[in-house]
Image 1 (tube, rainbow, N blue to C red):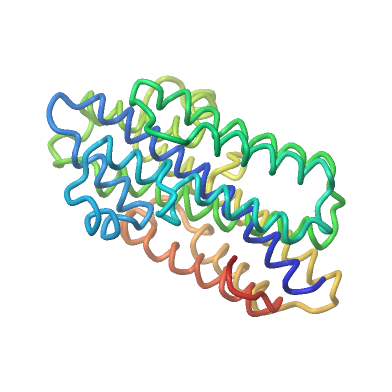
Image 2 (cartoon, rainbow, N blue to C red):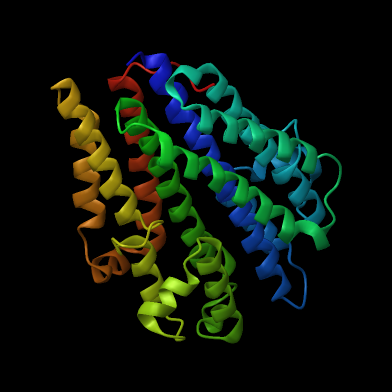
Amino acid sequence: MLGKTASGLFWMFRYLERAEATARLLDAGFRIALTRAGSSRSEWQSVLTTVGQLDAFKARHGEPNSSKVIEFLLSDRDNPSSIISMVKSARDNARGVRIGLTSEVWEATNESWMTLDKLLRGTIPEADLPDTLTTIRQQNALVRGATTGTMLRNDGFNFVRLGTFIERADNTARILDVKYYLLLPSISQVGSTLDIKQWETILRSVSALRSYQWLHGATVNPRDIAQFLILHEQMPRSLAFCYNKICDNLGYLAKNYDNRTESCELADRIHLDYLGRSMDAIFDDGLHEFIESFLDANNRLASQISTDYSFGPAA
């Protein structure tokens, strides 16, 4: 497969996954802000920090508040990291690699862009935010469903999956970090009603509350939640699940090309070094430090995939 086509598929699905993750983070920030009686500025600052947009936001808008953060991350067409900009980038990549997509995937992607382009014009009232974010997730699910239901399991599908799970692992790690390291105001609030509500919101943001409750009941335990989002191999947004899929798809490419690349070796090392640990070892080293190191390793893998398969710059 040409590097340009592989890159377009990889980045198309990274942008789609990132747009959905940003919607999930906005939903988490909105819900967590409702649990606070006082100022919610720290919640919105933590959301901006998680997506790496705090400095860019402050340069344009100053200190964060709910309405400005929502507009900046949701519908600001001058912000390349807003949801509307990322959906457009996904659609532009899809248009460039239509030959590698089924008609159903292209139509779902194009329809998603047209729906959200219309929806996200103008200011979204805060009262309408939950429904708007639900629509974004639903549109993304339509593209994902068309992809899994109609595409051949060939090289193109492998690059689609690599883009999806590289991005999803990054997003899950960041969502976990935003609660553990940024949101909790003091150690004295651990185990408080506020703490529990925030953990439940984090689980909701990755569509994991119900599945967590199936395993653990109604008891909210931060250690169990961290283990669920990091090491549980059946949870589709956990780091372990994502890396199982990444290693599988790199393995399929290695077999197809009869060439085990450096990215294949690196993925295996990340899987072993980070996800072969126990939760005791992760907590002993520090959860925040673990997440920062994992994010760096995940980014290195994405760069190595680009090198191994001759990607051009992200479109």
